[in-house]
Amino acid sequence: MPPAELNLARYGVLLESETDFAGWRDAARRLALNEVRPEDISWHVAAGSGRPPSDLPAVPDGVQLVVPRDFIEHAETAFCHSDPSRFAFLYRMLWRLRTEPKLLAIASDPDTRRLEAMEKAVRRDSHKTHAFVRFRKIGDGDEERYVAWFEPDHFIVERNADFFVRRFTGMRWTILTPYASADWDGERLAIGPGAAKGDAPDQDDTEALWRTYFENIFNPARLKVKAMQKEMPKKYWRNLPEASLIPELIAGADKAATEMIARMPTTPAPHHAKVQAKHWPKREPTQAPGDTEASSISELREAAKGCRRCPLWRDATQTVFGEGPDDAKVIFVGEQPGDQEDLAGKPFVGPAGKVFDAILDDAGVDRQKVYVTNAVKHFKFEPRGKRRIHSKPNAGEVQACRWWIDREFALIKPDLAVALGATAALSLLGKAIPVTRMRGKVIEREDGLRVFITIHPSFILRIQEAAEKDAERERFLTDMRQVKRLMTT
Image (cartoon, rainbow, N blue to C red; front, side):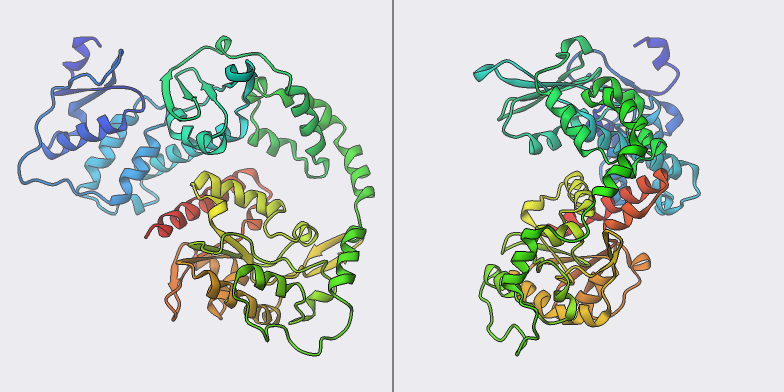
């Protein structure tokens, strides 16, 4: 670093790396407590290993730095942005927050808007990393490992390495990027220096299988080219084995969509009809279910197979009961099963369920440790041609199904419930709740159960405009991160 550059400011801070947030935080605290103004500091990243010494003032005795608690979380995310002026910008935000504690709530403030934009860019880059990293196998037997090359826009390798550890714990892998690498040997995660694309393998034998898979899951009826290119920008195509198929799939989308609609089933598959006939004879029950109390979730699930508490059982394929551990600390409650859930007999396995799973993963919430269920256990629909279209359950149907919800909660005894949408809120609270206004709020019931209010993930799927869909996904991700924090309190 040229000495003349440091002479322009009273203090020069040298950070260990582009992601040395701990070093920035320590230096910012020292400088702010000594009343060093933003324009009197120059921030730099040092070449070489180890954090170099910086000539910084000591922390004064008896003085504390007070800033809003959530600023650190915002700053830690924005710190991963590639903007070289981010160190100075974040210090300026810190400087202002000392005298403007409500700054982060002022949406019209240019600095607040800039911080939000930087955070969004980093989160979006993280999402793209999760979606577009492609591993290639090298070696066999004890030498087997998987290597991926990726080119992120921001400094997000360290931030996202744990995601890949959780997802690919059982395999040894390395992710190479131009500025850093992440290596997992099955037991230890290591962050190393950047690499070149030539350091990664070109292709492996599994890529033909991956292209076949991609070709078969491609849905031409839902193709929106501009939206697809926004979600999968062309800059990523050169590293994706399936990208070579995209032009041809786009060109034949109209014809493929017509053929797909013609093949669409009108009713559940025949084996489901046999199951329905066996378990649910088309007759009025002589008594309501629930006369015998179940002592476990498995017993309750078995009892629910014969539910006749409302007329919805007549047309549905089967009861779709809740799923998850009997001792879950949190229960997520949706509205009702959809078409795919009705056929599979499992909750949250359709398109909305896939969105739900992905965002839970991004938020660090383990789906295997939570219980998911619905306010109504049977699929309510209207036949429309060859399709079954979701129809919202009414208050009477929700009330009838509260018998099952109440017993699920009584057996599991969760610390927290998450109401995914208005129907779930009605079921849990016994009254209509304006979800838009109450979103992100926690309501405590008379029995002490905390109920967190948010949208149903299907709402995200119904948004057509790509930018608006991205924004809503980010809001739902923020909600799920709040749920994770509530799970530990």
